[in-house]
Length: 361
Image (cartoon, rainbow, N blue to C red; front, side, top):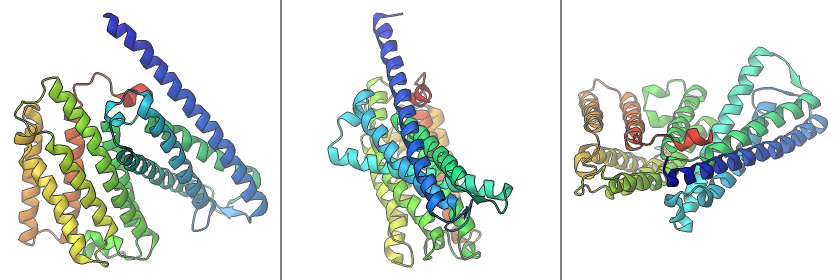
């Protein structure tokens, strides 16, 4: 073992212990706060069912969302200077702030949806049960405590792979939730974006993840830039590769994705469609220009990107010829975009012996 490697191990171990300790303290603080809130709700409020509008589950989901924002904000902020992440250290304050907001909101959304799902399942197994003060404190404390613990670990160990996983999970879960909760069961006969046109919680669940997901993609660009620079420095990219263009395309993709959610079709069809076309154009550019932009990556990556490109073009043809409805076409394009991001990141970080996610989880 080299001296440099021997010096690196204690630092890594210390970082793991520090993050794990802070996550425990976050759990304790959140559990105590949540327990106190649950006790107050139980004592001074009426007995509530586990699930449904105005239920204990809804209040717990809101508490978990607030807890996630706090835990992610503190964890992500502290990791900026203690994990040796050069990509975050060199960021301007405003850019780091955008990343911090995006990471916090994504964790908040996932925490809230997870809490709603858990209490929905509990309500199905305990039909008619009204939450009493003792159980109100226990359940609320457990929900907020576990949320704080998991979110703190996640935000502290943020990497390119974890960022892409969060993005995929958030958008998929939000979209599926919107599908099953929409007030129009025939939405799929119109188009995919119709899910975001209602004055209903389902539209918030649909548009919200698109907006926050767009912010996350812009934050994601920072990690992509850092990883591409590392690959280029190690000789993994051809000197002629224009890899510095890639993070910019990701930023534009993020802004277009956020625009799709921020401007539903019933608000402005033109702006909504321009954002959707801009998103598709950036995706097409990354696929078609991959060999010029990222020359030097493994051949298997370019072959996989070629398959994504072929699937995209075939989908366009099938839609233009009338075989695909607009809804199916939009869903397929979205699936291709997020599927490609996941594959791209796996190839980009494949040479790392241990992902930082695993090191901290």
